[in-house]
Amino acid sequence: MPVKIGNKAPEFSLFDTERKSRSLSEFQGKKIILLFYPGAFTGVCTKEMCEIRDALARFNEFNVQVIGISVDSPFANNAFAEQNKLQFPLLSDCLRDVSRQYCGLYEDFAGLPGYTASKRAVYIIDESGTVKYAWITENPGVEPDYDAVGQALK
Image (cartoon, rainbow, N blue to C red):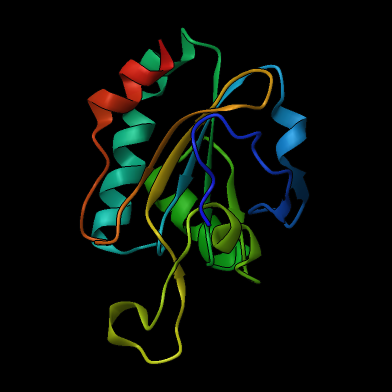
């Protein structure tokens, strides 16, 4: 069952691109935009992460921390972040536990039998850790409504 608006955001610890363990609680006190994306270097994910990167200046006025999560390895996420000049943490959910808990998974992603990826999802978590916005898509080709994300921050 996905995490819903009004829920306390479940705590997690995942490895970042430097293979350092990062926990959700270390960002408490800020609003958090938590982005689940199916795969680094895929077309829609690249577009989404770059769209968020380009909106960071606008989001900063709301004291926001952006965090991306995928099932990709820290190494792939690192290359993805470097190539796209992403200045926010990308975390690796290799075991798929956090994705499963928050938003669910795409089974046999991209037609690859046995390959499971995070569903594309956006959560906004307030300073006290409560989910204020949740969006999940069953279609990995659909991007979030960036205007709605911006409005939800206000």
